[in-house]
Image (cartoon, rainbow, N blue to C red; front, side):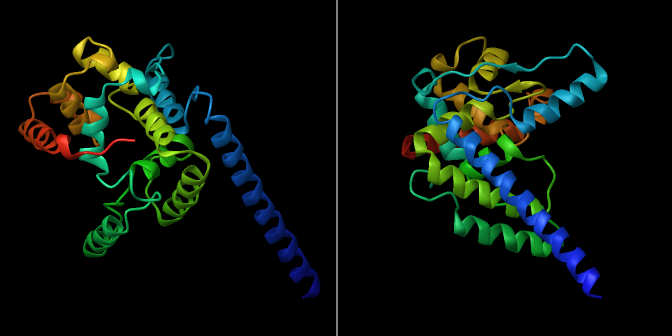
Length: 231
């Protein structure tokens, strides 16, 4: 029995060390990204593997652009659509989380996460697209690290540059060129609102550009944009 207990203790100790090492790695990468653009995120890598399973020569459309070269219209649209309290919270919207928990309890499974922009960035940078309580816990830890190490402007700049906006399309610059033939700096208010409306399901809406829901959601975001506070 003592030997079994010792073995269990060693295994648990090694697991704990692995967790610590993983989070040290996360922290080091976040520090690096304070001044350097990500070359590729975990989510990008997943999508690229999917594309290359069908086409070995597939590449992603991704070009990192600095914050001033992204139109304020898109910044306001994304805040209005995804996280209206972004500049005020510390990574978590507790009211949104409570609503998401209620919805998940009714459905008996995870269908909503109440995710803030910082939480979405944590997922995109380091995690898979799967939904589980373990993954949500990991997301929460990384979110706290992002909010501690980076300021709001940098968090938002990274987010706008790495989120998915279609099949193989990542970031504001690639999305602006893909859908409107302009740079991210030149997006109009209506174009920005449309990109924000697409963001939750970009691969669906690129196939259904005439969706009535997409048009209605774009109008709603446009109406909310003037009140959106950006960092």
